[in-house]
Image (cartoon, rainbow, N blue to C red; front, side, top):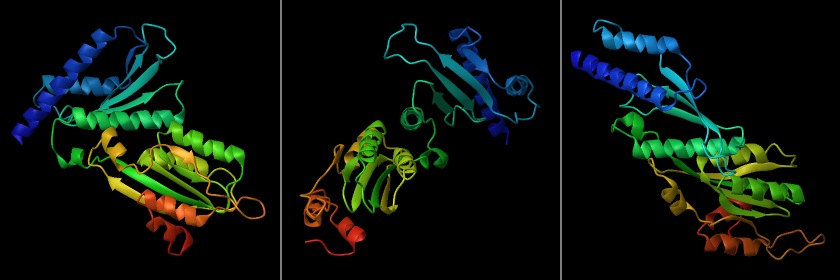
Length: 269
């Protein structure tokens, strides 16, 4: 137990020296805000008194970062940080927020930030850190039909915004495939299903754990390079029924032929 206490004491000392460093780097009141002064007081008391009990709450603070050069591509943002009691042997909890970013951009940024921290700042190989895997997801969405131009535009725009690739086949039936970071796929689906549909569902879902993998690993798992609309020789009275044989060959080229049967319940040819 004694060595654990010593290790905890050491971690607490590192946290205090980091807080001092931050307050000298960000001297203005509105730049560096400690949101829980009691946690800091507990932490200092713990370091100074060997008999003191371990602090009960995490140190939490906000950094408001304002770029010195006002430039269109520079964005003001705030970082909310919480230091777990065992930091720095475990990762800090950091969330970035900015009024200039959309909700999905923030989700994407924070997901990338978490990946970056896990790849570059892991100080330990404990199971807790290793289990924080990044998941690559591919969703196969089926709709009774997709005709509406605004919906088609949303599908393409949202996929682009969330860094998802895949394809959208408008007409009847409507088929949408998106692939990329799991959080981004889920954000895409939550937006799409809120639109008005006669019928829409996820017909099939693929999840691959990338064990802390980053951007390169996600790229490696993609079967599509971007998200584009695909039309396969429309026929039928309204010119909106797709040639499913051509869809099958397209899926076959991408190594996804087995999906055809999941959608239409028949073997492709």
